[in-house]
Image (cartoon, rainbow, N blue to C red; front, side, top):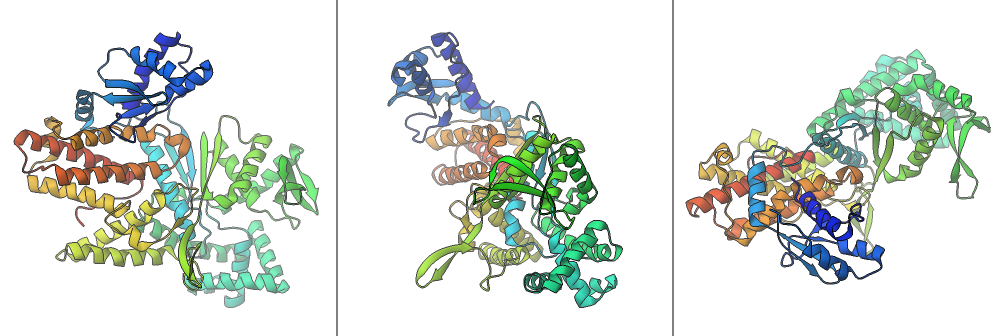
Length: 590
């Protein structure tokens, strides 16, 4: 059971006794006490009822506390301050709950009562170049959301809606033809680095050379109309870049593979149908030969109505058309009950308009939820004229940082860190440890932030074995593994005879932290953020480190030793499960 729900049930019974059930729908909070001397949990219940009754919170809290029925959970309950209700749990309840769920691989987290089919759209890079750090947040955040929703019991459909179509690729095909000639086989000779350099040059040409801009526009139409020569060059480019993309996903332990690919081009046959259906619904308006939809409430900076352009004046389509087809497909063909799109926060207005348009067109019904989760940017600190400034994270030359380069740097640092602690580790194990530590550092540093927040990239902080870092969490788990190795006791033996004794205040605090793990997921589906999981893992690791220091384990008496090993096992279970939901695998040693 989740203890918060047990406490809520007891409080609801007292409310019904005091107020004839009239406040049972009150949406009150039950949260851990910041200062443990006041209790384990605290609720604002009396303030909410007092506000409706137009009376003092203390006057409400007193009768509720007196009406608490006999139960096996609450040891003490009292009123504090202006009317907060403080609750302390019974030691026996804590012990029994941990013993009960010790063998549960889900650590006490029940599956959802009604599983839903949820599409999670993440990573979504623009191809024809190696993945860069700008794609990392979408990839890491989206992957953790997909893993956690799946863990809760939902059917998760991962979708990698990457950019492989449109203006950018018109530029690139035009450059390939200019550099290598019209023979598609010649384009196979270009490396990924050369392809990216061609695109960079082509983008500059398009802005400065009207002749080349015309060729690029012609190639966009060639792609959209199915011109064989242009399509073949495009396919060669996609094969080249997708191979690199999926290699990186595998390296970074991201749960995306080729089966999840659903690029912009996959909707190309649906785009004329989008125009046809919008026309049939009398929603299209022509503006300078472009076909647009105007929605109520959207205006540009000058106050003029802001359109959604669904077909350009030259007859081509854009990403708005593709996104409309994407929503329509996910509802009609995938049967999505919820669609979660993870991109940068700069696309918030775009997806608001896409949602409103698809609802107006009837493609998105009230039964389906569409959510855009916009994330912030990665920054770095630079010194300019003696002052520290925060700027977008790029190379010293101003270019984007490649994820592959980032990973190589992290792996080198992680190897050195591991060798400092274990100079005798063999090469294959060293490489495995270094890769997992790097992934832990990169992912954890991102996921401990709220998605909408910007954050500063700093290798030294991310790889620190103290403080709120993935390395610190990993080290705590490794410490527990080493403890069991030294004890000579198999974990299955502990599972067969779970018996916990509370002989130190830190043991009780650890029990409280262990039993609160299921509470992390109470509001997860509303918030869709992993930073609470990270905070929990850090608090649990910090508490265990103090316990390790103050409470001897292997040298304690037999019963206490057995109890503290059980506590250590419960901690390691939650560390491992919590990290797995972040997409982080643990290591055996560091």
